[in-house]
Structure formats: structure tokens, C-alpha cells
Length: 399
Image (cartoon, rainbow, N blue to C red; front, side, top):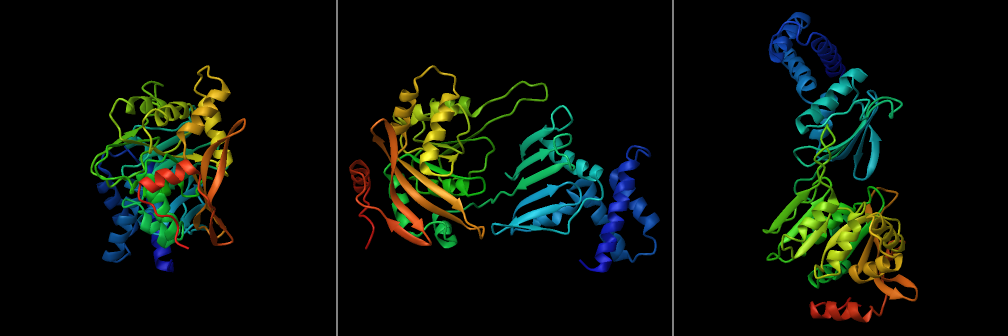
């Protein structure tokens, strides 16, 4: 930032502070007060500089202040505000600190309020945590003191309006062409796929890309905690969970939406992420005629993914034996696609495993693995999987 631009930014922060302090004192509209403040304190500036100063003050008053340039930058995937003076961003999988900063904690709180107020949400000492979704689909998380010890925390996960298709994943190196063809055959063969991985590993991105393989004529119901998926098929019904109101009423959970989706004549059910008791309802749907469904879960391996789904299903408070739930997992899920975030920030599908019954429960058999950048296909495929893929027209991996 040049010295002149930095001076204008400091002046804008000071004038915005005065604007906030004098709010409601003179009864005038904010644009009029901004013009009056700039005319009074910026009399020695040129006309162009006064116009730029007015723009910057308005940006802080009506927008998100120092975050606006970051949110306008299409290379930024995530914005992380750690108190008023520390702002970080993620670009191409790498986290880097920026020069952006708020003038005070009060200014940061005003920015948070401007985000949450139009969404009907708020944070205060009684409810210091909040999740929300911006109109463009970006996810927002807010934590304020006393839970946040060093000032308010604001995280904005940017939403890509276009999203990624499978060819984009190939170009990015997330999957190779042979895995692309295999997963396309799996989706078209109506196998049920569970994408697992850690936070930030790209599970939702891969889930959205895999959904592109669903045939155009099918009715798809998507269920998400915060709507991110943008499927390109013509017949898509999107459902989003609703948190409780400020009075603690009106909550609609993912589990309730999964149950309701079964009454909507879906050909496919796509659950953005399994986090709780809805796992049991999802397993019931997948094992009772709604095959070909897609979902994600937090897990570090295929084995952990299946165990986590079992554990989440037990949270449904239904008195089912553990063995019965394990049997539902074995019959409902066909493949686990394990995704990882590499040290350089790139995302890779490291393993694809088939789910099969073994003595005493369920197990996984690797079908594809990536080790040290080298892809390996494991053969032979389980008979039932190979048969279904053959019926879908998959001819195997070329040598």
C-alpha cells in the first residue's frame, strides 16, 4: 500500500470512528454525515482524494471495511479475522497474513453486526457463537468474548458460484483421469459413496463434482446445514437446516429434513455432511431403495469413516443394537472416497475403498490408492462391485 493510500485509509478509519460515535446525534442520513465529515476534515485534499476518502468511509460504514478488498479478490478462498489487528486469508490452499486491520474492536463488532443483522442472527454474551450463510452462499462463523480471549473471531469461507466439475478436479490434481472414469461409473451405477476427510480437505467440493455424474433426468434432493452445493441438473430440490430463533424456537434439523426428503420422491439424496443422529435415517434411506446417494463425513481414513457413521447413528436415541446399526452401514454404503489436504495446500483423493462384510462386522478393501504421487489400482475388485460397474458400462482400468 502506498504512503498516500495508507494515509487515506487511516483517515477513513478515524472518520468512521467519529461517524459511529455521533450516530443518531444529528438525525441526518449516514451519507450526509459522511459528506459533512469529509468536507470538514479533508478540506486540504484534492477533489479526487476527497471522493476516495468518502468511498472508504462509506465502505467501512455500510460494507465490511478492510475486508472488502479481500472479499473482492477471487483468489481468496477464506478470510480469517483473529481480533481487530490480525487478518489472515487462504489462497491456493496456503494461509498468509495480510495488511488488513480494523481500527478497533468496536469497528470489528460493527462489521460482524452488519453481516448478521440482515440474516436475523446476532451474537452477544448470552450467545457468543454463531454460524450463518451470506446471500452469496459463503459460510460465516463468529466467536466473541468471553469465549474468544483475544477479541472477536470472524471466519468467512468463500463460496464459488460456479463450483468445480470433475474435469476441474482432474486439472487441479485432486483425481487422475482413470479415477475420474471409475467414479463416474460408480455414480451412474447407483453406488452409494461416502466422501471422508479432515477439515478443509475439500470434501464438499468433491461431493459437488461427483454429483455432476448423476443423470439429468433424475430428481435430486440436497440436504445441508448451510447450503453450498450448486448442482447443474435441471431437477434439483435444495433443503437447508434452520437454527433456532432468538427465542429458541423454530429449529429444523438435518435429521428432520432427511426424514422429510423420503416423502419427496427422490431418485438421489445428497447430504452435505453427516454430523449427528441423521446418520441413522440416512442409512435407512440408503438401504431401503434410495441407493446412489452421496454424503460426506469427517474422518481420517475409510475405517474411521465407517466407525464414525456408526457412532453418529447411535446418537439418534433409537434402541437399536450396535450390531444392527453396523449391518445397516454395511448394506447402505458401497464406497468410501478418502480425501486429504497435502502440505502444499493441494487436495488429493488418497484412497478409494469398497465396503464389505467381514467376520464380526464390516471392513474395507482398497480399490485405488495414491502413494508418493503414484496411483495404484488394487485388483480384483469385489465381485458385487465389479458386476454393478460392468452393468454400467465400465470396462476397467487401462493397463
